[in-house]
Length: 168
Image (cartoon, rainbow, N blue to C red; front, side, top):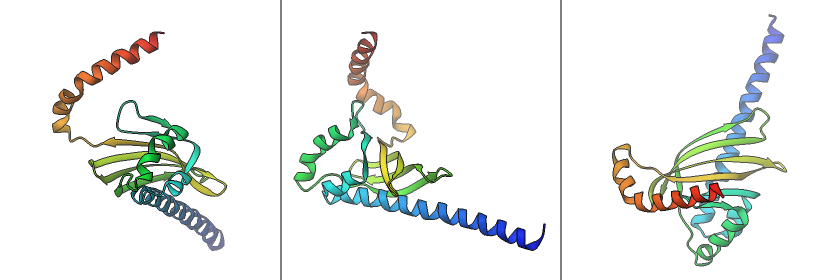
């Protein structure tokens, strides 16, 4: 391979890696500012970072919020000046080759102690927007049996209700 071809190939690869890094930096900024907007009870900024059809999955089994429902649920918390405060302490971001969607996972410092967030972002009009977010409480493996005992009765009832709905 001649030196010019090698140099062109190297520049192409380096440019592509730089574009991926830049996209990851933009996504980090979106996620950090989204969490900050909740901590500052900035309703418009918080929901402005989400797609119109975004989904938020909360820690309760029945929290599968479509955007408008989540807005209605959240509004009183934001109006009181205190929503929730999540700070990422670790985050992994993955971006497709076309830089049109990304997925991530993060560990969060929250009022519920360590939680895990994961989700999907998509690019709309050149801006990264959160399309899907899942929040879960991280439970150490050695405490799972204890947690199952705490939630067993409520979960058993909910499972009966959900299974009954499936049969109808």
